[in-house]
Length: 184
Image: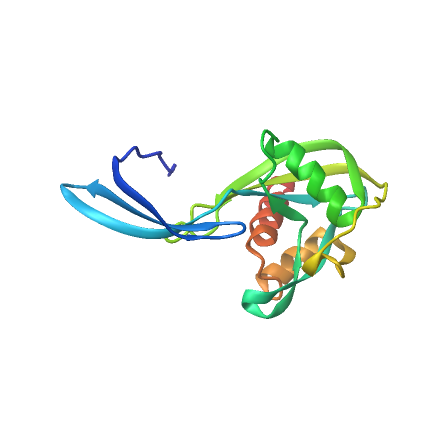
């Protein structure tokens, strides 16, 4: 069975080409098979995503505006690993509560993946949250999170939307497919 493997290549030079609010663009020089190569990529803090699943085999989706693609996307709750010292699980719990007002009693790490490994070092870990209940919160959301739409959708329907390219969020696609295959 194929398995990705970690590589430890020596980086001889690293420059931050652009310093951003969330991520940076870096340029690294490294030696590969006797040749010095230069690659620019987005240095990202990483993220988590959550599939909240209820007792009716429905999953909680959110509709959120994503400016780079100029679309409202149906996604699963997700967010950055941007709180120092916070574990991925704690970040997932925080994001589920912040974006949906839900909390869960049962948590399981489902899958992790690199979003665009040719130009970005972001890794997203997807968790499944079960035994969910609405708690609500008094947080003041900002930007594109101010008008999130929440919807409980049967898992099979969400998977079909991914297969029909009607839902194109990579976190939702990767996570929903993994959950559906795990449940088979």
